[in-house]
Image 1 (tube, helix red, strand yellow):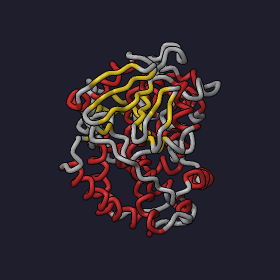
Image 2 (cartoon, rainbow, N blue to C red; image 1 turned 180 degrees about the horizontal axis):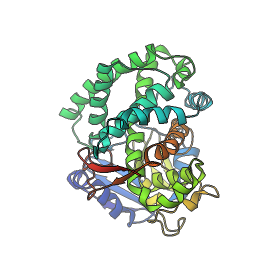
Image 3 (tube, helix red, strand yellow; image 1 turned 120 degrees about the vertical axis):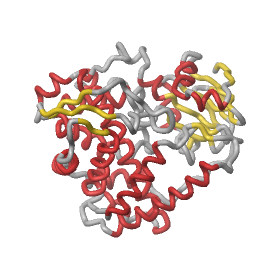
Amino acid sequence: MASEVSVSPDALRDDLEGAFERLSAKGDLVWVAAGKQRFLLVNEPEAVSEVLVRKAEVLVKPRSQAIDTGPPRPELIDATIDVASLRRATTAGLAARDADVAGAVAAETAAWGDEVELMPALRRIAIRIAVEGAFASSLDVAAEARLHEVLRWMDDAPRVLPASRLSRYALRRGAMHQYLAEIAAQLVANAEPGGELEALQAVPDAARLPLAGELLLGAVGPLTQTAGWLLVRFADDEAQLRAEWPATTRTEAFVREVTRLHPTNPRITRAAIADTSVAGEPVPAHTRVVLNVNAISRDPRYYDEPERLLPERWLDGRPHKFAYLSFGVGERRCVGEAFALSALTALLPALAANRSFRFPPLQETRRGRRQLAEELRVLVSVC
């Protein structure tokens, strides 16, 4: 039987990560009342396959992964896009990323001095890797500057939505999606054969540009976020990583382990479109089910010393099929998983093979995407 907890929306907004960490100690399944919502929080891996795989048709991906404290509402199901076919097409078109990554890193680092504002620099690299590498396209200077603006706003978007559907955030979000549509139009218009945008040819015209924009955000934002954490955690395994380069078997394991400890999205939300159940717990229609990714990925029942960074966990395969959710599982898992792993595995040696990075006391974002703060400056030296 799931436990019952009440949490104020203000408490969630003030310290969402801390609140979810405390809620993970309440049991494997926890009903959480917050504002006008009552959602089921899942803190263990055994229910993951039920939520994301076996009941994917009734537990659907909602409009937003943010924690909604407003009144429950029906979810709209987009049946115009065959997600499985899109994933197969993007994976089939995945080219080697090493040259794309090396070019993006060289173009950015040529202007570096002894001190660098890390996150803006990593975002510029990630934009070039995604636009020129993954999508075989280009953006003009104005569109790239506007993309920076959209990404910064999206990074800072609230993780807890207010009860009111009419808010300053909602109005600003509409403007940002309009900007993104304009960027996506240029991205699609400039695309050459051979990039992942070819996978959108079968998508209906009305959905093509919104999906291209979503794929662009889904590539650049997480790539920037995770690249920052890779450099922060590099010192934990530096000697063994450098020893294997240019081979990257351990580097890929390192990337997996860093994404386990620093997932792009520490929560995965699904919405019930009909009455159902999770692990025997009745879940009424219009109810949210939230997978607590941090708790699941650090469950001591499946990971020895779960707080330690140990790339060795991944050298002999996946530790547990449903205890690693950094890219999700099932048909609705991240379509860019293969791209992200390939790009990040190539990015780390491109950045760190001949450089060392010295970090001040870490500053992290307090809102939006959990990553290094935008103003964080690091010392860089050639080695």
